[in-house]
Length: 395
Image 1 (cartoon, rainbow, N blue to C red):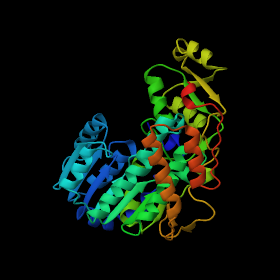
Image 2: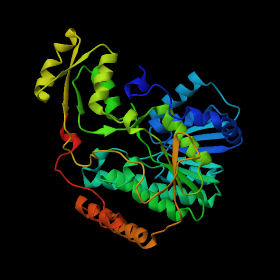
Image 3: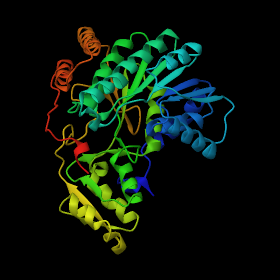
């Protein structure tokens, strides 16, 4: 399946930038040692492959998912074979004592790339998963940053999200707060990051769900009013590597995307997807009709679909990679923009955030509303609104 055509493009986004910097990339990567945290997720796997195929001296990969890690190794061996450097994977939780012990036993890396995250808007529906999101997206990041500083790591790269620009959901806000913690540590280590478009067909994404619905012979559901930018999985790895290697301290990389060419609704992609595999979408009135027709429509080369306006908490009507107050460098790369950040540490806010979260955990009691209010304190103008509806309550 041609992912580029499905998302409305006919060429790779970063092709010219990679070509322009390919010699420098190979020279730096082949002489360097890398640790990739969260390396078995969709973006992580793509990034690991980009590093691996440039023959690094050392490439260690950590991820909590043992199964995804096995598939990563099989995929790399099948596509690229072997390197002369040290390539190993470790099925570890970076919040664990085991990971800390692993780090202390080695920690000899030039570059640490942190791609671990709770990325779903649906993960903010309850106070417990929301607290885990804070741990993974903020405090684990800060912990691994401090560890990198202690061991003298040259550069720390971390994935942010387009949803951190003027956030309207807790996931995007957690990444914005993460960026504030990154800023504090940038006094002691060189840091760069990236704000992403949606990665097409990444694990757990709606587009990945299309594959699962076809496989399981189930209706396809998609919002028809929300437009998104998309990059391919390989482009996500290229973006991470470019920011990691070429980003200056506090730089945030993002893809330059033309709204006219690349902004597309999920319903449009669903239609293209079904057409590609030989089906015509049949628009249903409701979930019951969609479930009922799945037994008969596919024999007629039609597939039951439910395309409707989004009404769940945390969905942003549009995407943006930067705010009007951020300084941009749009000249250095052809298809990569760069946000240039001066050192600006909001220490009082960061200490308050740490204290309140620590207090909640010690008391073993907190509400979602208390966390939401804390996020409003951290991010003036935070656009979070509760609709009372969440994605888990829908097909």
